[in-house]
Length: 374
Image: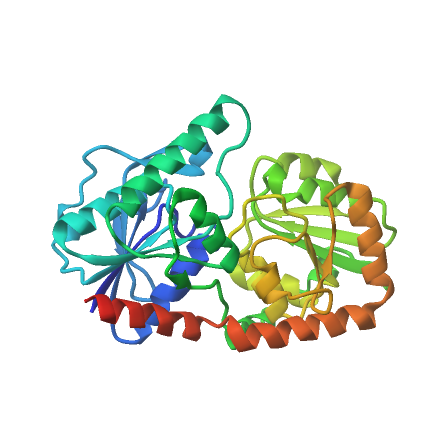
């Protein structure tokens, strides 16, 4: 079977949707299927290539709106060669991008079966005229894709609930997931970075990790202000975005590391005393929460999409009611003061992860849907 994944952004751009696509695509390839990935062009990247995993990547020309966060497909993008590849089934990632609209309409017109996987629990833009226009656009985009007749899935139950905002009843969940054994191998690789040494964590001190896009809604800058008030604590921030410059300027115990290779991110989580995600963003199911759970790293976070499934209650993680620096400081003090309790919660999160959120289970569900549709 030839499967085609449409995703507005893909590796090497870091992010949860990008890694979700990569992980599912790899499972498809390992099962003997041919896999195409259609995404947006990036500076320095070829228009077409086959990567080390044997995945065939097509990069279509786009306008990099919102600093590249919202790539808009250019009119008359050359894609004739793509449609000559004999695609049997398509997976369309997210409901809002222009590429998703284009992919859904093209698949319907060409008689190609497909499904749509959504990854968010809120509107992309908030406030002002931009927010009003953004909401109008998202409802328009969802309406166009919905009328193509393909089933929608959410990466968490919260995403499925959010889809009702657009008159969409989800067919089910295809949850975000990880491969615990694969992550364990990366964490313990021979060339693993010793992050506590690299970041000068003092003897008896604590290493706090944040991983994600450095946008205000994710809360990295607020977390940094909280960590500055905690003697002996070091914050490692992995990611890029508008807040990166401000985080670098803080210096001292705040380390803005930029975009890290995935192996080093896993090693950071494996060595950290806490992974903190004080997000107010419309998350779908943060990959970093899954990876932290897989590494048995104690988690401190807000209640966001997916936490009710991965972290059901205070027995699996510590939660904060808001993201003010003072709230985060107090919560970190409490967590770090009782490492035994923190590890017990981390072990509980790990057991729940292994039972419900592995890529093999998600792949099996997706392929069952694809085989019924083709």
